[in-house]
Image (cartoon, rainbow, N blue to C red; front, top):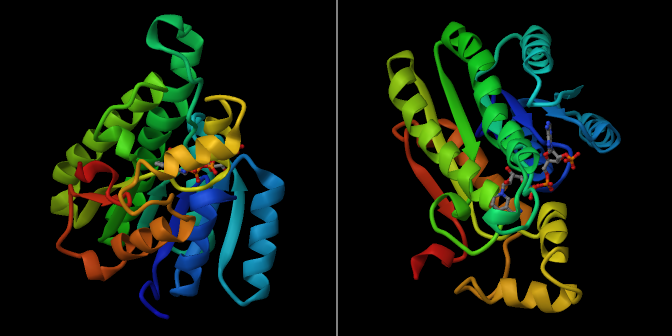
Length: 256
Ligand code: NAP
């Protein structure tokens, strides 16, 4: 119940999918949580539900690709909750599913703007708060697509590979400040993002779901809570000797 008692977490993309599950598990474990997202209705509805249950949680409209948005939201969250010692860089988009030679520069840049620059901006503006708090845990949502290849969504692969290594660099840079950084690498988790991605692969969504499930040795896709519990672990003191690590939660996808 109290694995995160006294901690204040900022999570991007927390309005639905994996992010919303992580918000829910973090507040249940005692953290105060600031949700930064562009999906205002879903974000505010989640805040209403969780605060109605007595949890400390608030929502900021924030495009993670906009530095001023990020800076304002993070500073206001620190003012509201007193400090920040956890950052979950979860916001992400899959982008267009085209082969490399058909992609436009705009399509490429859009994915890097959210998935890579967003992680940079949030980390940049949260670090001063973590230094002030004297501790921190940065949790970056990479992917199995940041570890191994597949013949699809090239900008997404590039972005998640970047996030994997940004994590290790920040782990080295900020270890002297008692700030840890680790990445999480989910397999396919059934969320609106995956539903949107599978719809781009053909007409038969059920067949695509079945084929995707079959890529995991455990025989099915994951659910958002499978990742949310990894977030709780990395945010908590249970993982205090972990930094620069990759937490792979993928039903065995990368074990081939
Ligand atoms: P999701 O259901 O689409 O949720 C992502 C959230 O991020 C949405 O609320 C989305 O809002 C928000 N977001 C997108 N662009 C944003 C921006 N510029 N600023 C702020 N928020 C923004 O996705 P998910 O499946 O839960 O994925 C969460 C993370 O896990 C992503 O980083 C994803 O790459 C990673 N991941 C997912 C899977 C999977 O199988 N689901 C596997 C590996 C890794 P909008 O809906 O308005 O865009």
